[in-house]
Image (cartoon, rainbow, N blue to C red; front, side, top):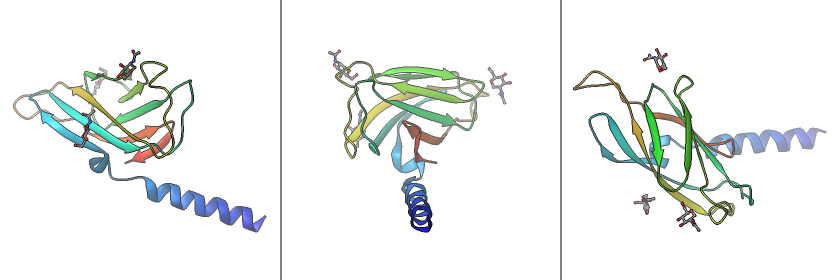
Length: 132
Ligand SMILES: *[C@@H]1O[C@H](CO)[C@@H](O)[C@H](O)[C@H]1NC(C)=O
Ligand SMILES: *[C@@H]1O[C@H](CO)[C@@H](O)[C@H](O)[C@H]1NC(C)=O
Ligand SMILES: *[C@@H]1O[C@H](CO)[C@@H](O)[C@H](O)[C@H]1NC(C)=O
């Protein structure tokens, strides 16, 4: 029992220490007046199967939309999250440790010239936190 508990404790500590700062995972490629373009690059913490993967972005502020090129996106503005999923079966399978990279765009509203820019405060791949 004690060994199991210790193992779980160590696993939890390791899992927490793997979550990076989001600025290390998401690079802003271009900043517009009411939008920015981001590049997400990470090593997959787990493998995914034919049913594919989900990458969830949580924002600190309201946005008006999130778009992607290599995937599908859905979002909830009230809850400030956007979910990116694989586009097809070829793209579904990722091996653990494999490097994955994709681009997305965030649009937002606000008072010009200094609107409140929504930032990503947490990113999850298959519900595993990659950064916060
Ligand atoms: C599958 O999706 C990937 C990533 O969006 C894309 O590069 C590839 O062309 C797509 N393949 C097919 C067969 O549509
Ligand atoms: C955020 O957006 C929601 C839905 O559009 C709106 O109800 C809410 O008032 C907004 N909050 C802020 C702080 O702008
Ligand atoms: C994101 O940036 C990395 C590092 O510059 C680059 O290698 C990768 O191709 C970019 N990804 C996309 C989808 O543009």
